[in-house]
Each structure stands twice: as structure tokens, then as C-alpha cells.
Amino acid sequence: MNFCTMVLKRSSDYWVALCLENGIVGQGETQNQAIDKLKEAIDSFGYGFYFSLVPIQELHEFLALETDDRQIREIAIGFS
Image (cartoon, rainbow, N blue to C red; front, side, top):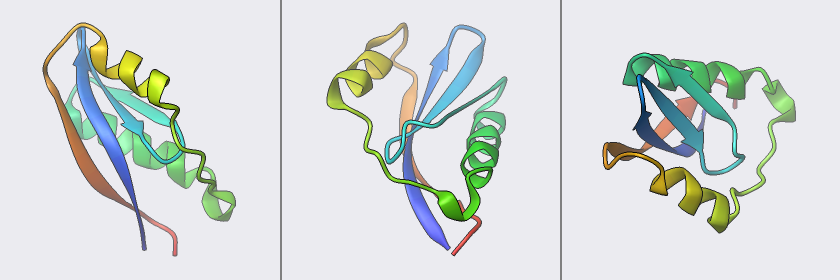
């Protein structure tokens, strides 16, 4: 099983999860929905999963928007 690092933040009426290793995002009405959507998006890449780190400027923009309600977590993705 592989692991990725994500940043989770609230944006208006929904939560957004950004994978720092590849820039893939998931969104949902709750934290868990956003994480599940992110996992689904990552899993859709299957064995072709790639690592392309999020540029620091993009990360700054993501973190600077709208709210102080954010978290950084490590998530497990379902392929080996």
C-alpha cells in the first residue's frame, strides 16, 4: 500500500483535499467525503499513478484562500 500527503481545507460550503504529491483534488460536503473523493481520483490512475509535486506557488494559493480551517494528513491509497 502506498501513502500520499494531502492538505484538507474548508472552502465556502464544502471541503477540498489536495494531494501534495500530484496535485489531484477531491471535494465534498464533509471532510470524509472530500478524502473519499480524493482517494477515488487517485485510484482512477491505477498503476499509472505518477508523482509530480505541487509547485510551491500553487500550494501557497491553495492555503491562502478564504479560511484558517485546514489540516494536513497522510492517506493510504489502494494499490501496491
